[in-house]
Amino acid sequence: MNKPYVYITRTLPEEIVEPFRETFTVKMWGSKEQPVDREVLLEEAGKADALITMLSDQVDEELLSKGENVKVIANLAVGFDNIDIKAAEKKGVTITNTPDVLTETTADLTFGLLMATARRLMEANEYVQNGDWKNWAPLLMAGHDIHHKTIGIVGMGRIGEAVAHRAKGFHMNILYHNRSRKQDAEEKLGAVYASLDELVTQADFVVCLAPLTPETKGMFNKEIFKKMKSSAIFVNASRGDNANEEDLYEALVEGEIAAAGLDVFENEPISEDHPLLSLQQVVALPHIGSASVETRKAMMNLCLENVQLVLNEKEPKTKVTS
Ligand SMILES: NC(=O)C1=CN([C@@H]2O[C@H](COP(=O)(O)OP(=O)(O)OC[C@H]3O[C@@H](n4cnc5c(N)ncnc54)[C@H](OP(=O)(O)O)[C@@H]3O)[C@@H](O)[C@H]2O)C=CC1
Ligand SMILES: O=CC(=O)O
Image (tube, rainbow, N blue to C red):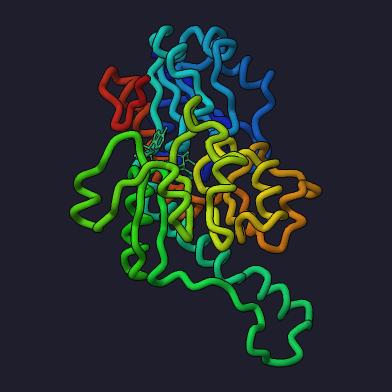
């Protein structure tokens, strides 16, 4: 009997894929960095029983209709805004993602980004490397305190809560905003529920960790930035589209907020001449929230395990539903 055919849209380490070659025929797009050509993906979908996709691949009706035999698509991310879940469900294709295994790693990065932005670490590093450091000065590279300040987390889910744990260690006051209250986070962490307006007016650090949905798209806009403190720092580690970048740029230039730490952008990779990158008070990272070697390997393994389970007519570990 022919082995099921699994197509992976990037080159993953052979040590991860190899154990699965006994049960599947695996083919991978030949680059670790470049996204798969759309035409190649459509063609491969036509031959595949399963796909492993990246967050940069659009899984839409066109792709689903080409993949006549595709039973499962495992997305190497917890976010699944690149996938038309309803269309997949209509076609009977199982979609899986990678929750939990990346939570702590992404929280580390989010809190690290908050710290780097508040304490101007990137600017200070560049200052030293450029040979500009000639003297010690009382206000040289002075930034903003983190400890005992107020953090406002929009999207207090798995990662949001893990960020709140870190914030608690820094004796921060924790506000959060979700569509529903999280009693456990309130009890364990002393987090206080707030409306979005209350949160953005009171927080020193506004951290977005909500998924990208029609409801959250552009939620950080001109009006919201205007409500923030002029000393506020905005951190976005969820999806770029949750913030309106033109409005963010204006808020930073007009001094309506103090700084921004961004791991995600409306268009990724962000172009090097993007206005946001011209601002010293912006720390920009290339979407590396979950990028530790350990976590990325765990995510890859989870995708492969989910594919194996579905192809063996079993429930996957982490199925996404609409
Ligand atoms: N930068 C990076 O590399 C990474 C980014 N991410 C991003 O982080 C996101 C969160 O991941 P994770 O914590 O695992 O997801 P969860 O689903 O656990 O958490 C998402 C939270 O957002 C809240 N939420 C949803 N809709 C809204 C809304 N309209 N307004 C306010 N809150 C809302 C949910 O609560 P409720 O339903 O009550 O509203 C939930 O608590 C991912 O979707 C992804 O986009 C994840 C990993 C790495
Ligand atoms: O952005 C990354 C994810 O896992 O979602």
